[in-house]
Image (cartoon, rainbow, N blue to C red; front, side, top):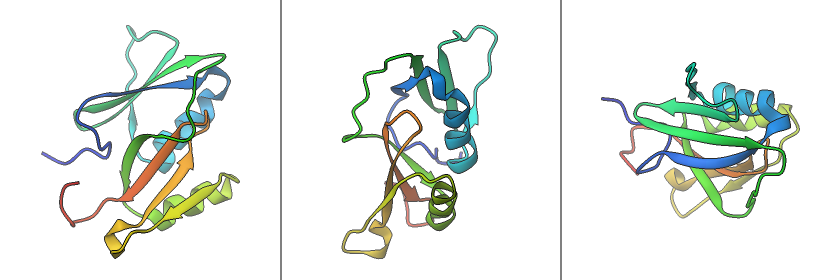
Length: 128
């Protein structure tokens, strides 16, 4: 079994801006390479993305309660550089965070709704 790109113990639940559905899909599908879960029984105010067995569930609303300071979800990407370039191309702000080791490099950005998302390098360095 492959490791999930979503680094969490269980499913992640966040709120999202209803007016930003297409931008949210672009962010999580194109940049972070998660698969959208499309089901006929899914409520219309819910977007769901998956990587392996872990799901990211976004409850859509007009006025979501969003904390843009705390990291809401950590996602592993194949290339931090490529993800950073895609975000810059869309004029999204990206903050590079580095620790003491090369493997500690990560990116922080806000998703289209304003949730803080952390991107780490998906590599052979082992589980986090």
